[in-house]
Length: 103
Image 1 (cartoon, rainbow, N blue to C red):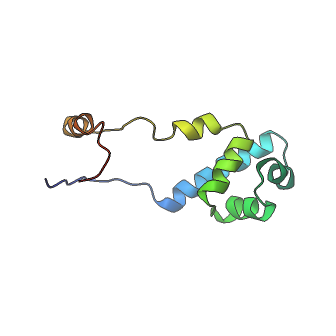
Image 2: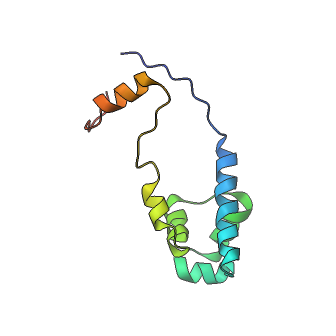
């Protein structure tokens, strides 16, 4: 089978910047300094600063911060449901619902 998908992706930097902005906003709304969030999340304050200013962070650190801010449910639900944009894609998803390996 030959699959051709037309992908309209948001640039990675835009996604990372938005994640960092959202995280910083949630931190500030709770009145937390980077140092206090560091203590809560076990993520070093310089790592939090780098994320907020340069948008770079490991997945583990991001999940720790999200959990410390009360967003573990949202992290767990990320990509938990299939997405499709055409009926053919939905049929493929339905057909492969229980598949454990790629083609």
